Image (cartoon, rainbow, N blue to C red; front, side, top):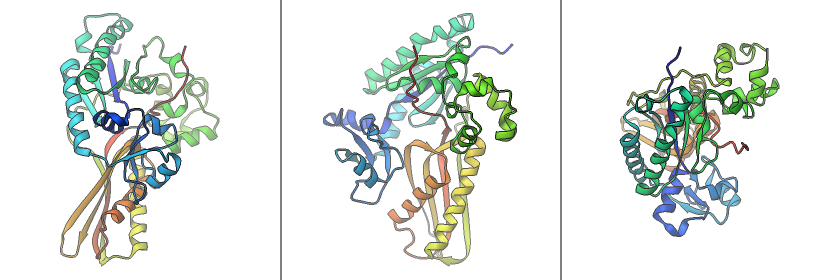
Length: 363
């Protein structure tokens, strides 16, 4: 029998925007949009909950965000400040939760607290005993950093991630082994780790809209999602054996092209970027992850090499978004002022894909 585990999924609430609202108290309660100003070509990196009510989202063009929310407070991103804040938060997490921490982005981490709670039994009691620890972690972050976090508590990563997407911001949700099947039933299929846009559309076309549909079906899901079918069905019942990934190595996916002749031909470069974005998106789909950072790399005839990147708060998984941000980086930093020998596109800040807030009622 599998040994019980207790996993926290900690997700900071509207992290970039919340840091800005904390540091500028006059912005509290206002729709804060972190990104380029609307009068310049640029994109949104993050949005406060007040701005999200207007439909503002990460990777959206700033001018579109302004049209949706003309009263928005546009703030240029301060990535160094966010990284420093993230480091301070992770110090709190490790102080209270131990060293088994898988940080998946600046504002998100899995924490395995099983060893600290091992004296409790049975399994549901073990989970219940985790609630005071989760509350203490949330309170320490609030007291020391003046920010709020949402924590999901569950016996595995899948359920902890889904649990943290409920009742944001400042939420705390526990899912036990004994309740996981019922908890999952009303949720949309794309709440499951790895069900991105393309897979979700395929499932919808086949009539699968909720996890209950997956739980109740006698259909062999391999006809819809290939070899991943059996694992998808297991996840529909809340089964997930994935361990925490404690490898500190920075993970990324990239694609590069070296041209036979140096070129500044815009149509050729755009076509190259599209192919690279398609290749990256296929790999993201294969690993069932999204990316929060997009980077372009250029090399000129004298072998001078430059890289530029942008980070957004919500993970990207589709080729179109990766391509659009790559084009924006090239234009924003005027990287094609002279012919290129090499053009590269890459993503990093890789993280699981699930619905971040489902807005479903639970009694």
